[in-house]
Image (cartoon, rainbow, N blue to C red; front, side, top):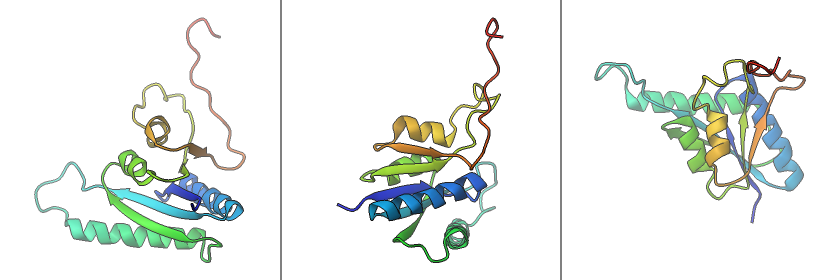
Length: 151
């Protein structure tokens, strides 16, 4: 069985680093990478404001451009997948049968307790395979605000 890595792509520096990590890991294990970009029709709109086919085509162009910028000549098979839907749910679905799911993360912020549903947190909790959270090199880990009495 081929070692298969699924990686989330959103165009952020954290996501770009996750793609780089995934390619390196796949190369070390003789595997392949599937880069996934999830898109949704904007929730707040009026009927007909957005053309679904245009959004899907723009998403396909975005992921190809993004992956090509990060790895113009990848040393491993690198597939792209565009999924319509919630990013975390799309990544979890795409990771069925994968060896590992990789997502970039900004890590914990002082507001982490108030931010429910971050993609990396939801993937880590529900993916059917191991999940790797990738940070930028030399990025500082930010601790949450202390609880009263912990100061």
